[in-house]
Image (cartoon, rainbow, N blue to C red):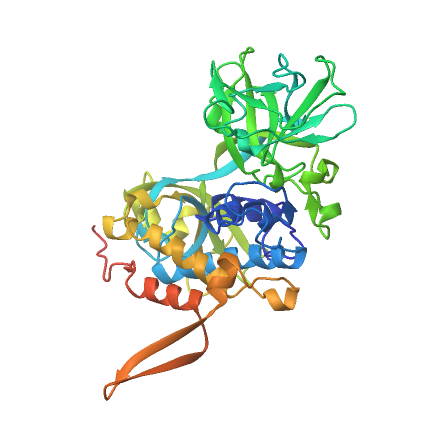
Length: 463
């Protein structure tokens, strides 16, 4: 689902917002899958057998916006509590400088400095194909019973398709016979339609739709690294949830399999979308293809001189190196180390008079971290931390305020009251903490045993 920047983290620029949601350890689609909601989390009905079926009521627009806000807020709060990121992340940080060449950054697990993410448009308005394939009927079996062959490269599970007449749009189901149909023939699925189809003459075309997938075929540059290229919602840097990418036989041609239920357009945000009723017109018809890059941006020391001369601030670039990656300790580099220890000397004498009593210095640095550089105890916490986030986000989703029916399914389970029982004088007493939901209890229990990262105390100048 494309985020609405008007309601989600309005303090961030669009660029920073997209970067944040692209790199969260558990994004919107991750929640949809782990909660077993799938299409329902997007306000879509597709009658899929991917786990949720139609048992879970689709979230309305209010519920979806609140879910996005909860995912962002709870994960950021959790990371601040733990002291480290649960996924690889880019950061921008401003630090007040003292007369030492060594500095400790806020987030540990430092693997690169002077870098930030970038995007390059590789192809705008790439068409989305919602049909998995077109096909024709096979040889009649038993009079007017027909088989249909499904492309095994696009259809993994024959139960996940909708077969329609290309002319009148009528849908057909097929027989389930464990000994005969459906069956794999040469890597493709062969299914047998379960109704007489007198209208067919053996050459009529069929449209075959996957209940959850759509397809975008693109041509990448020669020598391109496929993993660097992503499909994004039109005009944004927000990555579209993608199932897989495979080569299609053409020169540098690849097909991206995306989740069709993740493509509703903002114009239909207040609708429940029925893909089983062919409402594909409510989905994005094109997506953008972009290459994700890493851009170099040097660290800068800023001198602020309020009220001195005609200058208030001036800046100078400085070299940075990683001294300790796990602890995110950096070292300022200079041909003349004394200049770093006397920060006035970093700036040309003719720019301003340097009064140490009224002058302050700060360092602005861009860097990248990964939890893979942390201790095993921290790295092994990530899975439980994600479980904790899932539970708390679901528990605190304001379903009643949004008018969402959430009595069943994952959200309903996390919002159920948690009852505590204890033995007292041979009897059992049941009590309820005010406002305590099952998901909040799970979060508190998992976070209670999660190790925190603490910045080492009294780091010496000469590390």
